[in-house]
Length: 323
Image (cartoon, one colour):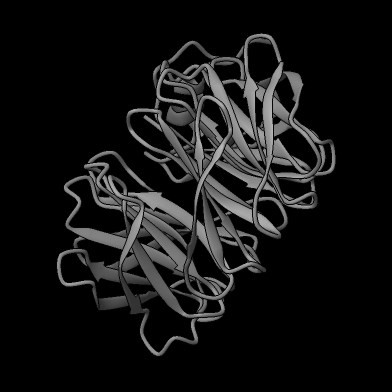
């Protein structure tokens, strides 16, 4: 039977619902959570903080990316060597695209035509034309690549390498290696600031963040996250670019960083091993995927307090807000 997400969200006030393959053409906002162990994505209605659909995907889903038209989600399926293609309206995986060995994280070009993935096991970064499924290039990068980001003009791709403690800068069209930059130990994430001028790289073992100038591909600064032992992982910027929120796996917390001063100004306790992170478009709600607690924490950014937790599948990894 066809069930709309809007109806599910309304019904969630009365009782929690968990459906598989719910269909909808509704513009209702959603929060997607990739669950590594059950090979699913949980679709959450942010208005009610309830799971409204569970989407079966391939093996070991981790990173996710949203198409510019907001109709399609691409999820990296590490054990299927593929990207799963999820239709947002029907909440179903409709096909898979070969993505090279062991894709971990994925980003899209600004026009949504090319997906860039970090291939962890083979130390490559690959570009895939999503319409045809053609792999456009697969370039060797540092050992154990994970974080990946693309510049606002679509010209360059940044890829972190956990074991090499480096960031590879690639030409987005050809895959040519332009630069290799030294960063902190065990870099996990590369996140572009809202204005597109800086790339922030979190170093899990180093306990710090490195700031890169996008125009020159030079390292501008490196600063610690609290005592350097909380193991920073993923980064989300407030819409105005003034604050950065960073999940800390070992600290079971989120640090709030003043971007201009490059200083931690507060921290918020969440569940065990927070990993993925997402903000609502207006910046009022912050979400963390707490991998060892099998939950998502919902944070009010004004009060800086957890106001709800949402149970998900086992080992939630990445978060994606669909406005």
